Image (cartoon, rainbow, N blue to C red; front, side, top):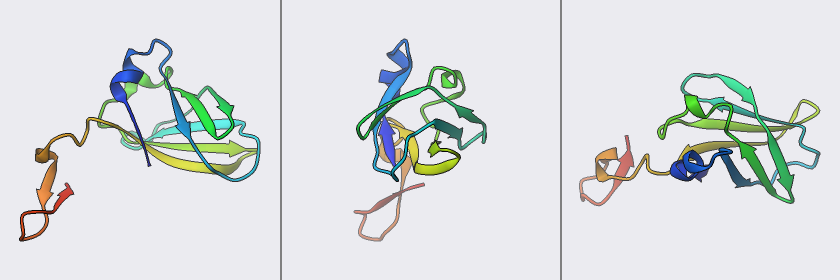
Length: 111
């Protein structure tokens, strides 16, 4: 899972983010982002440098919110090389986002 800075991407005129990855061998030819809430899927612009991929969110940013969850799929000749889930920081930032899960009052689970 990758947690990206929503505010930084929103402030960036190009709407890009860098994501480290380790996947199967191959040349990435497609990056697909799938919005988990709407199930919409878009191939997006990207560049690769070593094990870092820079992904452009510019074409889909207007459909995303801080609570969005995104699946990212990197493909080579139609075969998946890497998959990741992307969420944005700030979505789990208060104790109200958690519910107590044990009697000792020390454990919380997102829910």
